[in-house]
Amino acid sequence: MSVYREDVIRREGGQPARVLSGHSDYGLAALMAGQVRSRNQTVFSAPLPEEASHAKVCGPKPKATTRWFARQADWVVPPPPD
Image (cartoon, rainbow, N blue to C red; front, side, top):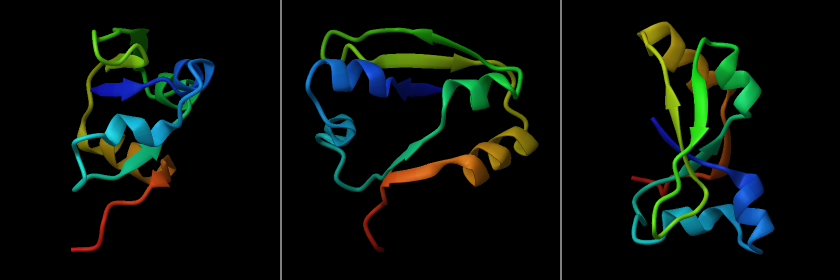
């Protein structure tokens, strides 16, 4: 699962919504790394040439885990209405 590190974005003087550039049909939700780790996931930086804040979350993601992520996440930028 690809994610973006808010600390890196802020350190660079950016806003989290920048990761949605070119993806106007999407929203952006936030979880803390500790929340993700509590579900037996690992988190590591995986910078991309165009986005230094890119990271990955690795580990099994059964439905119970993905549902938990969805319930715990907070909207940073809600998706546009249908």
